[in-house]
View (cartoon, helix red, strand yellow):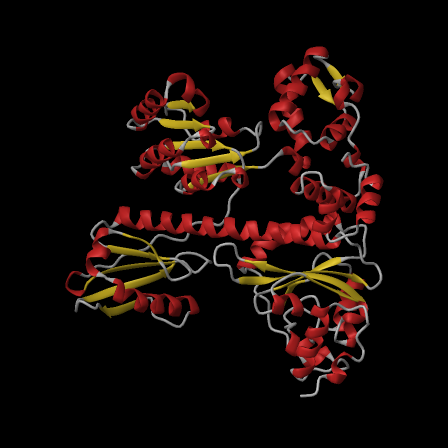
Length: 557
C-alpha cells in the first residue's frame, strides 16, 4: 500500500515515533476524517484489578490537576477506555462529542495515532500534541500517554493518558505522569501479593478443616503455589496442565465446580474447583472416588483492609506479620498491638546484636519463638544473611513473629524475601501523606497530655496540618508534649508552638500542581546527585526550563 499520503497532514515538527505511527495507521485502513462514532463501545468492568489499583492514584492526580485544564484517561490491556478522570460536565460533553467514550477501543488500527494507541503499540511513553493526532476530531487535545506494566508478569496492564487543550502543554507533565504510572504499578504489585496471601490463608483454612483431603492452590498464572502432602502423592507434573485448563474454565464460568478427573497414574479422583478471589487464584481439592466426601472450601478473604482490620485478622490467626513505615510512624507500637491482653510480648531489637553477640541474640529469639509469646523483631533490615535465614526458619515453623522496619521500597532483596514470608503485612504511611488525620491526632494527644483542659484553635490545627513532619507521629507527639508543658489549659495559639513550627513551609502554600512539580524536580535532582544538566535530561526538559522552575518554586538545590 502506498503510504505517501499518510503523513500529508502531519506537522513537520512531529517525531519519528509519531510519523511511523501515522504510517501504520494509514496502512491498517484508518483515515483521518473517519468518525470515531463508527466504533462500538463495550461495558466497562468497574471491579477490574487495574481500576482497583489505579483509582486512588487517579484521585490524587485529579487533586494536583484541579487548577489546570488537564485530566486523565485510563485504558485497559486491550486499549479500551475504562476511566476518564474527575471531569466537569462540560469536559464530559466535549469528550463524548469527540468520541472519547468509555468502553471504546483506541488502537492504531481503529483510531489511528493518539496517546493511548501509540504507547499501547510501542510500550513506552509518547507525547501527541494537537495536530499530531491522526483522527481530526482529536486534534483539539494535547496528550502524553504512558504504558502500565504489571511488575509481576511484565505484561501490559493498560495505558494512562494525561490530556488537555492543545497549546497548553507543560514539559513536566511527562515525569508527572510517569510517577503516577509507577504508583499504579506499585499498587498492582501490592494487590498481587495480597492476593497470594489470601490464597495461602484460604489454603490453610481448608487444610485445618479437612486434613484427609488433598488440596492444591493454583495462582492466576496457572503455577502451583502450594500443595499438601496428599496432593503431591496423587498428582505429578503431567496432571498440572489439565488442572490449569479446569481452573481457566472455572474462571470463565464455563466449567463445572465438581468434575471427575483421571490422573496420569490411572487414579480416579473427584475434584472440586473454587476460584478463591477476584484475581483468578484457584483452590482445588479432591479425593479418590471410593472415599469421596463432600467438602466446603473457605470463603474468599476480603480485599485490602485498613490497618485496624488487618491487625484484628493477624491477631486472630496469630500470623507472622511485617510492619513497615518511616521512623516515627508507630511501627513498634503497632506490632505490639498484635498481642491480646493475655499474651506475652518479647521485643528483640536488631540494634542490640553487636552488643550482645549474634549467637546470644539468636538464641534469645529461638527461645522466645518456641513459646506462645509474640516476638517483635525491631529493625529487621539490620539482619545479616545468616540471621535472616534463621529468623525465616522460625517463621516457616509457625512462630508468632512480628518484624518492624523501613518502607518496603527501602529494603534489599533478601529482607524483602523475609518480609514476604509473613502472611500479615501492615504498611504505615507517613503523616505528610495523610494530612487530614493530623488535626484529630493532635487533639487526642493534647487531651491525654492535659486531661482535656487545653485545646488547639482551628488556625493552629491548620498550621500543624501544613507541616511535613519528617519525624512523623514521634515528632508530632514531641511538639504536643512541649506545648502542653507550656500551656496546660485554655486555647493554644500558633504563637504557642515552638518557633520552628510557627511558619508553614513554602510547599504548603503551593497549589497541588506546583507541589507535584516541586516533588518531581527534587526526585530528579536526587536521582542525578544534584547534577542539574542530568536532571533536566531525566525530566525531558531544557536546562533553562529547569532553572526557571527551580527559581519559581524556590527549590533549594
